[in-house]
Amino acid sequence: MESLEWREVSEFQEEDAFGDDRREEDSDGEDRRQRDDYNIEKALMELADEDPVLHNVYPETDDDEAGTQRTIAVPNHPGARRGGSQKGDFDRGLGNLFEGQVFFNEVAFKEAVLDYALRIGRNIRQWRYDKTKLTYICRGKSENGDNCAWRIYCSTTGKTVKWQVKSFEQAHSCVPNGACEMLKGPVIAHLFLDKIREEPKYYMPMKIEQLILEKWRINVTSNQCQSARNKALRWIQREYDEQFARLRGYCREIVDANIGSTVALECIPNDQGLDVFNRFYVCFDVIRRSWKDTCKPIIGLDGCQLRAKMKGQLLVAMGRDGDNDIYPIAWAFVPAETKDNWLWFVKKLKIDLDLKNGDGYIMMSDRHRGLIAAVDQELPQIKHRKCVRHIYANMRALHGKNPEMKKLIWRLALSYNTTEYEENLDKIFCFDSAVHANLMKTKPKTWCRAFHKIGNFCKDVENNSTESWNFSIVKARDKATSSDARDNCKDGDGKNCKTELQSIGLAKWEIIGIPCEHAYAVIINKKLQAEDYVCHWFRTALWRRTYQEGITPMRGARFWPAVEEPSVHQPPRPESPRRKKGETMKLTIVQGGIIRKIKRDFKESSQTDSTPVQTLQIESSQGILTQQGD
Image 1: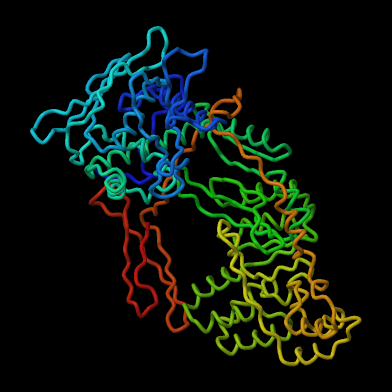
Image 2: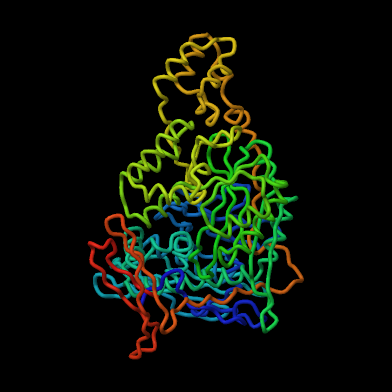
């Protein structure tokens, strides 16, 4: 059986996922409603105020049945941590069984027997099954070859729906041999469901087999683990599909939990009259207010591709807090990174942040044409910085990889004053006039520090922090000042220290907002407080205000508000672009700094019905090894 990746699970039928004909049983015959009821009861037990007694056995109150006790799996020992946040931790109970024990439903009894089997490592299997009764036996053998006498029988208690253990032979006469018939594919899938949901690429069949052997001393086959993993992936995908259909309820939940937030969901009706998802936008009110009050007036825009089942682009607007760390402001999910979608996103952002015409703000982004056009149309007065990483990537594509060219371009970008800027520009011209000519087309003044707008105190010249916004910012190192500026720093007047230091050309201080080491020496020499000369954006009090309030967590999908609007359906997967017969493919070859452009005709293969592919082999001396057409 072939192992499925988390993005390759088979799709569910529409009526099974969203309609009234939804199946109530899984492929293994288990009632989904009973499993959901058990999960809810388990969650309620975990929220109990009183500590559990008698190894997680809760005594009944006076209103319950006399002489009985009920048990639910509640992790309250070192071996069963809640949530299983670490690799190898599982949210399981102790597996205590006794005669007279009462369970919430059939699933709760099965889970208790499973916990018992995992704890003792015996070969437990289900022997009798009925809608009102269940029996488990041990299939182990003693040293003499006799069958093990262990047996447990549970059934419903009279007119109630609860299950109670009626008989229990708890003595084992067998020898553990590492086998457990109870551990089949669906059971393994339930054990590793949350693990696979969090890290699908880590919990592969071999890893699941290894963990079961190490933790519970039970041998399972690779085929069992592979089947269990595929089943878990299908369950997870079904959950995603059902939650996606209730996307309007999720939007309502965001607004109810975070009053004042902006949520926009756009759907397009298809030929069948169904609402198909188009794009989604969210901006939390607490984030919006914190950014406007405590963060720098700089916004980074970028989009990244999503590789889940439903393809698309995630657009994000990123701010900077007082510590120069990333601060997500708003984000949107759109089908593609086009001018229309960028214009829609920028319009929403303009209204939420009250940017007006953009005056007083700074925008950092790559050179995407649709993004630049949208910003120019909606925010004509905003200061638009370009990303040096993208500038260099484009130059490398035109002139080839050259460490010296990279060093010169970055030196130009990191120039703090116009003198350094002109000197580094001349060095690039001496290095290669073609590189200089193409570099001037990018308008270096839009991405060089020497021409940064004073007042935002952000020295970055690249948008890498926005592209990797779920990681920490990689701060650029300060560039050392010249010896002439260092000598002038030592001759400053203490009364107007900051004014005179800045007047002699220390633009680095104005751009960064923190005095350089030479200015700091003058401040200490004049017996002044260095903190008084640091920009207010870097104050600890202001930084704490940024994170004083937080987003109110939303409830789970079961508690989302019910809406009258129809369900949201996923859009069809976009077809892969194919070159037509006779279409030419353009290639750019760089050799010795000379750009050569060639064309190759694309010929369709008549032998197979698959997508035709043309592979063009080029010698490595030409700068490109292999070029493939789709």
